[in-house]
Length: 224
Image (cartoon, rainbow, N blue to C red; front, side, top):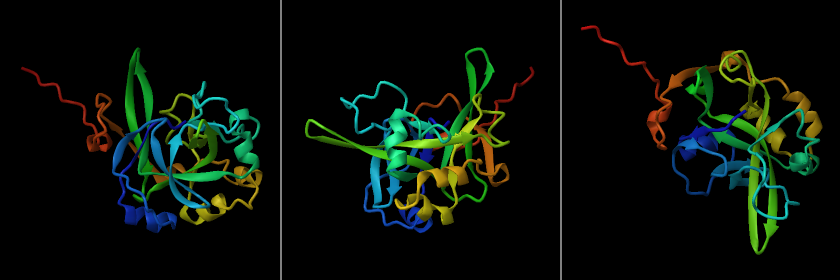
């Protein structure tokens, strides 16, 4: 599962890694949440999409259920995502890293930040769709998830993680001529734990601030 993530790389870094020109104005964000506008790449280029997929067949622009994540192994059979899978409407959502929470006590959770060990951006695999109604057009996306690797499993209660692509896999993923089912089988295994790192961050912060991705050290208790 992926419910929050950060993206703060410079535009030139993202263009070099993802291979797309980005003619969009977007700043660094450290607390990206579902329904926010997120930078996405599809076969037609870079664009901003609403994070929480709104199927084209919905009667209103209000989704009645959570669609910011889609399980890779179930997406082809779920009504909200099935059309995007069949039509090969796949996208990639870039991230500097993402957050997960660990239950440590009753009503208390610690927040952890996950990123690539080599410092490169994360290429999270997703699906997209376009909804039209009342003169309004909404392009939206979802992030696909798979079984968590050994690094994430002890933290995430449901043992899920985003489907993460390597740079050399992005063009194939975005190619609308490549069937989704073959790509889903190829990427069913989670990104290797040895290529990622995690550390605890401050769970008390609520602002979209760079302190969110800084390592959190527990305050020392001083004896008198």
